[in-house]
Length: 56
Image (cartoon, rainbow, N blue to C red; front, side, top):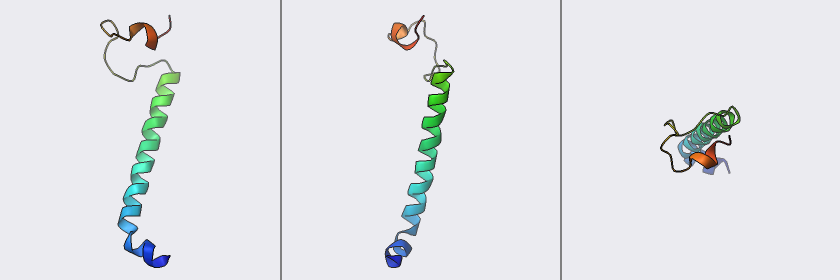
């Protein structure tokens, strides 16, 4: 078991860092959605999904 960990330590660290980054990105998107902010960053006037994103 220790041999496996020592051989793959770099891969394990990179995977852990990527998982943490993905967690915080998803968390940020959820918080923004709850606050009513858009995640696309553009205006909704010409968006095809205008009626479905934001309930009026």
